[in-house]
Length: 422
Image (cartoon, rainbow, N blue to C red; front, side, top):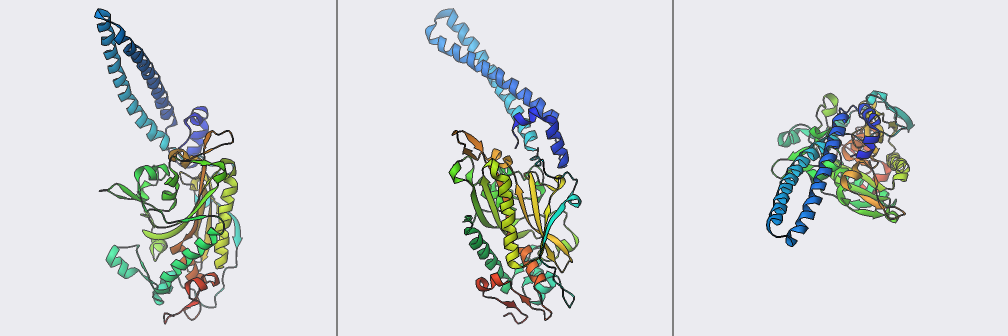
């Protein structure tokens, strides 16, 4: 959510920011309802003040004057009630409009319509050269009895899977590797709830646009998280940090749920775009002046973890049209997938500035002791399914086996995955 004062002072700038993100928001209507809301508040406050003054006089009066004052007080009470009803309606429309405004991109973010205008800013690692035709992850997973989509289809439908045998063990090795790595960097490990209330989900900024991706339980009115970010951010709802306690960094493991509406073709085969998947996410609360550096730090953590697996990748800087509502700036890491002969997104990291913090009421006390909103950032540590794909495809061998990355061998107890299951 943006500060209404910023919108009043820079309406054209906010309109442009909405256009850059492809968001259709009626800023003029927002300013009109804002003005109406302020008039109602001022009028109602004046009526309440007059009513309070009259109420104090009543005990001291008698006779006709007393009756006239009581009558006038009743008239004021009715007007106040009417004003409060009008204010409730104005506030509802005001909140609908202001919450529909996405977080403006930072000034250094490239303007662009969609992902075709994103910029590759770095490449790392050598693309593997095979003396055989490389297989995709699903073929490898089925031949080595690691992934079962057919039985999952009978139980849950399309885009679900059973991870089996060494794949299941590798998942927990990946989680342990991340927790160990990031704990040494000062991150606090956490396993958060995967069902959250509407207030928490809306505060994170994922319902106004993109709500079609979110699963909701109609009976209990819970939302299922699509990333641990959505339940870690609200951990500090309405709290105030001390400056010395920032940055506060978390690394969270959770199962995630997404509809993946519109996905088709090769993307829906195997475990690339599943309705349910596991993920380890980084989340940071930091001082506003430190958020740009914190963003680079989260990207560095992502790179170091992918490099530890020896997976080739590229870093992509996102343009304005490819930013979600909460993000003011974003980087993606795309790992090389031999089975598709292309780079595919496996990680992202976003600087959400104070957009989520305003909705959550998460602040810190500045040097003068006054509360200010923190900045929030998030970043993928490992999306388990996608990083398993990268491992299976990049580490496949001619004999059909898969070498396990060295950093996972001790944790998992597996050096090589072979057809005999050893």
